[in-house]
Length: 453
Ligand SMILES: Nc1nc2c(ncn2[C@@H]2O[C@H](COP(=O)(O)OP(=O)(O)OP(=O)(O)O)[C@@H](O)[C@H]2O)c(=O)[nH]1
Image (tube, rainbow, N blue to C red; front, side):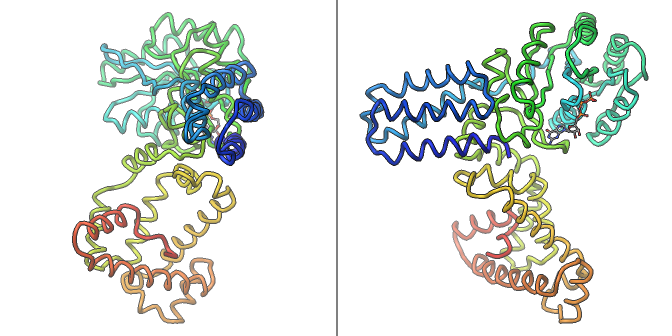
């Protein structure tokens, strides 16, 4: 999971600091030495780590911090603020042009995730009611054009291609096509290479000169750490970029690129890729990321995800069912599906304050497997059984277990938990006033109490 190693080391350093009560200058310096080491191990650029620790130390050894009632807390607050400003302080958005269409040029090395992220961006904009057009300017590999068509279709965005022609001509034609067909955003998926070379840069410069993109976004693979930062520096020097999309952050336990890229290149991270699916794209908010790194969760992103993914009409319907005590196994299944749309369980849980570090990857995977098991058990039931679990007798249980590849005990456990859940809901249902209403709405929105409650 992203930043896992760094988070663990920082929290160990802060734990020691907290255990001290009063702090001296040398306590702060010891802690900062640990922070510096943690940053270097996370593959943060050497100079960035050095400057970061110097900035925090300068603020933290001030007398108002050391003599305050909660000195350790103040030091952590300073680290939080400096981490945020290291990553750029504010969320940097895409600049939309007043002239339609806005042209976004995607560039990056091969395999960085450029094509996937062109489609993720298209999907992101579509959800905002825009009409993006994807353009296949990676003409050297026929498979690249095909790949863009596949992901474009999944994103629900049309793909403009002219086979293996001249990328500059293709880009120009695509822009006039976009004007004719009312596309307000054009996303150019350009060619990548294994290494930066003159031919690649020459081609990108030509496209830039001829079509004048409003945004040049560089896609870099976060797992490649400092190499990604060096790539960003070279692209910026040669081409001039407006921002970065940092991909595969979901698998980067270190996070050095995320922390260094802004400081080294002066260019902001605008989005991060958090998985292979097209919905796994998040606008980058430095303050929220700092909060995640420090194990304080990221409730704001969780709320954004819920607003994007959850169907609130269905939540209202569920709240009503809870009140009437008619919530059945079909409803449970629907709610579980909604929660799963928000992403892997481990990722969702890590956004809750205090949870990071408490739940390991293995436990999150176990939880995920349990959810899948519950889903397949319910899927093996008939309509009548889901609506009225009381009719599930031993022979039905055997059939359900065989159908879902589970054991009769697993079916029994689910039925027992669901029974307890219904009893609990009955209590909520009969609870009057604002409190009862709030609890029901919350349970409806969160998919009912989790099995086992
Ligand atoms: N886990 C994870 N995988 C990703 C992410 N983004 C892309 N990938 C995977 O990385 C691989 C490369 O992505 P592509 O989009 O093909 O990369 P590209 O830069 O277009 O590569 P070329 O077409 O070879 O130039 C694919 O297998 C993607 O599924 C991400 O954010 N997280």
